[in-house]
Amino acid sequence: MSIDNSADSYNKFTDYPLFAYNCISHLIQDTDIELLWKLLYYNDRDAWKEDASHPDLTRTQKSALIYEGSSDSTSYRVFLDFGIDDPWDVQAAQIRISPIGLEPTNYIVGHIIMALETYVHFSINTLSNYQTRVDTITQQLILSLNGANIKGFGKMYFDAKASRKCDTRVIGTIPWKGKRTIMCNWTT
Image 1 (tube, rainbow, N blue to C red):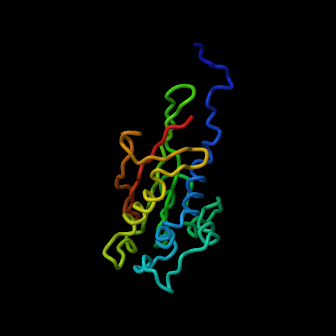
Image 2: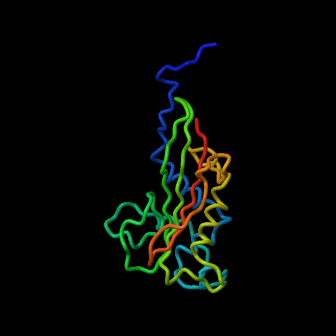
């Protein structure tokens, strides 16, 4: 038995730059997590409600929340990098999704580590249903992405057996509270 280790058999991770975008694309298409989008879009304490003043967002509205590199980032709520870069003077919620680790197991298989970060300005964090926006958004991210098959990435896991790095931790500093959820996969 011989091992093919020619240059063509090596994993080039060509989809690596698209991992965050493909996760966000999955979130936009997932109709089971409309609450996530409402909590990002509406800043009032009743954003979770299903009523006429808080309708579900259209795909166009969701897409318009994705930061595309303009100089003023305060109009956006979804970012493809980690960490909160500028202290905003805006009371809002945001999510940041990005690959934060790539651990090669061998020349074919690697372990991808994704960070799903939620930041919320402290003054809008508590909702009228006695839940926090940070925890609800975090739960919606896990609901949608845990076990999801993401294009170019494969199946995402929130599972200590996939990686001991998988967890959710508190991040941020006042006035921006947050949670970081780590999800992983094995890719070939």
